[in-house]
Image (cartoon, rainbow, N blue to C red):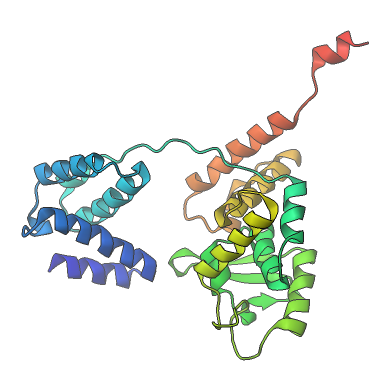
Length: 281
C-alpha cells in the first residue's frame, strides 16, 4: 500500500516517466530480495543485509549506489529515518572529465552524415543540451530572430538557451529545406516523428567508427560547461550562477566541479616558465 502511495507522490511531484520507472525497478529488486516480507515492515538489519547482498554480487559501485539511493528516498518518504541513516552509499572513483580539442570538434562535425546529425552535435557542443533535451525539442521552441531555444529539462523545468550564429544558420537551412511538416518535433527520423535516445546513440556510434574519437553524448555537455568556465576565467570572472542556469542544474554544487576542471585546464595550458625565460637570455 505504501509503495503505491509513494508512486502517487512521485507522480504528483511531476517526476519524469524514467524516474518513476527507476524507483519501481529499485523497489521491485529489493522486494525480490525480501521475499514475502513487505518493504514497509523491514528493519535496519534487513537493509544492512541487503547492502552486503549487493556487494557480494560484484555489481559495479555505480549500480549499487543507484539501488540504495532509490531506497533512501522511499524510506525517507515513509518516515523510517533509522533505516535512511543506516544506508551507506559507496564512494565512486573520481572520473577525469575529457575535453575535446579544436581539431577533434571540427572532425566530429565534418564526419556527420547528415545536416540533422550535425545539428544534434552542435546542440550539445554549443548549447550543452542533454540527450533527452535534444529529443524533446519542437519546431515552436526555436525563435530565429532572437536566436533563442526553449529547452525542456529534467523535472519539466524549462530554460532558454542562446544559440550561436553557426548553429542558428544551420537550423534555418534544415527547417526550410529538410524538415517535414508532418511532425511538430524539431528533429526526427524516417520511421519516427521524433528522435529517441537510441537514435542519438546510433549517431554517436557512427561518429566513433568514423573518427576514432571515443565520444559520447554527455561528454559534449561536459565539454560545453568546461569551455564556458575557461572563457569566463580568462575574462576575469567565474560566473557560476549563469552556467548553472544555462546547464539547467538544480544545485550550484553540480556546477562547481566545472570551475575546478576549468582551472586545471588553464594551468595545463600555461607553458610559460619564469626561470626558463630568465636563464635563456
